[in-house]
Amino acid sequence: MSFGPPPPNFGPPASPPWIPPTEIEQALFEAKGRGDWPAYFDTLARNRVYFEIQRDKADAVPSGIYPVFSHDARTGGPVWTVYTEGMLPAPEPHRVFEWNSLDWLARQWRPTDPPVIVVNPGSPCEAFLPSAPPHSAAWTQHSERVRVLSYTPGLLTLRVGGPLQGPVAHGLACGALLFVRDGFPWNAMAYHGQGYRNERKSLRQSWGVTNSAEWQYQQRTLLALDGANPVWEFALSLRRAIARDFGGYIDTSYWRDAAAKVLRHRDSGETVIIPDGVTKADPRPEAETEARIKGVQHLIGRITRYEARFRADGILDENRHVTSVDAWDLGRASGMARWGLGARYCGLKEAESAVIEAGRAAARSYRSWQDFSAGYILGRCLHFDDEEFGEWYEDMVSAHRILRSEPGSPWLNIPFK
Image 1 (cartoon, rainbow, N blue to C red):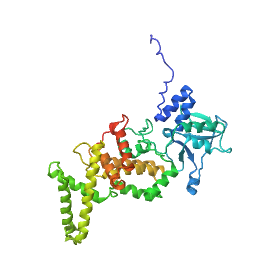
Image 2: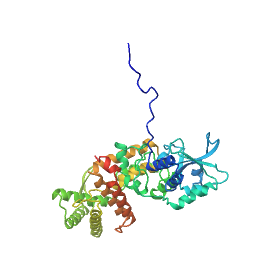
Image 3: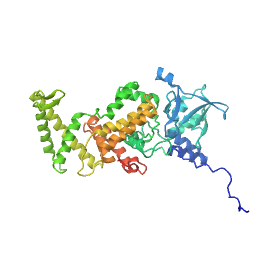
Image 4: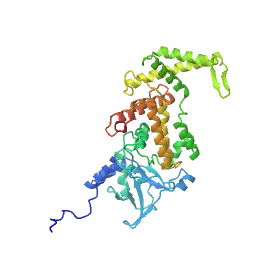
């Protein structure tokens, strides 16, 4: 019996081609393949370079730098291992990282340090670089030609190692305005961000968070939508009610007058339900009520002026309004999950659960990414900007435009609902 000729290939299946995690590693890989080391160095010089530090020493004296050196059998001696954004190991409780510039690495080197730096070990874009002078002087020259910034706005996506679809990706996309603003991968659930010490410093200075319990409190508060100003939501919810009554048409003067009527009614001693039955609240002093009315009417003016600017800048379509500022809390909740992980105040699973919850709450509150974005930006501006239309506003406009236009944007590739 003849079985015919054997198939042409009996060997093991070919390995799939390597997919660089981000455009940074792709640029390194291509430069290495061409033997173009100036381009390799330029890529390192314009991006963050991460390295492991000793957590116990960083916790004891946060102002110090405590790099972890290792031994590499290929060099037969110690090496300083560094990583680019897409090649970072997953966060572990006792393994933490910092980042700095290529120029800093050149200036930081001491005779007691390893003579070799290895970039992205074990990957196709790996390189062993002599770190002692005069070699390190070339790193400074490359750094002088390009500019590395702590925060370089742009859309950076993990092609591998980060979710691109599904509930986690949706929740991460709710925080994308902040991460695009700072140039971090929008879908990096395994987040290192500014580095361990800087993530802790940022949480302490901006949120008063110094431990896991305080992080959990802030995370719960944001997800419960208890952090935004209730006066903002009162004004916006009143406008929603007017829009339902009038088929979508909202006259600003009517909105202001309605706010005054509602507040006067409430402050006159409205009837409320309590566990023991029905009672009537004590009336507020008239001067206090009029001050509250004046404040809410001023807020209505601010909202309408911001919305007019939003329409001019493409954040809102014509005849559209911001329905809620819940996005201001939910976008930060998505960020808080990652910041807590970067600071090691939580683990990966806890952070992932918070991100998913933020995405689900956003889908309940809004109809589209554009509506969500407008709500987030309005909340941010009401909190910080004071109608200056300065950095607090402009950096969000830039991030919004990137997310609404670039082909790889999650807002163009992940359904909002």
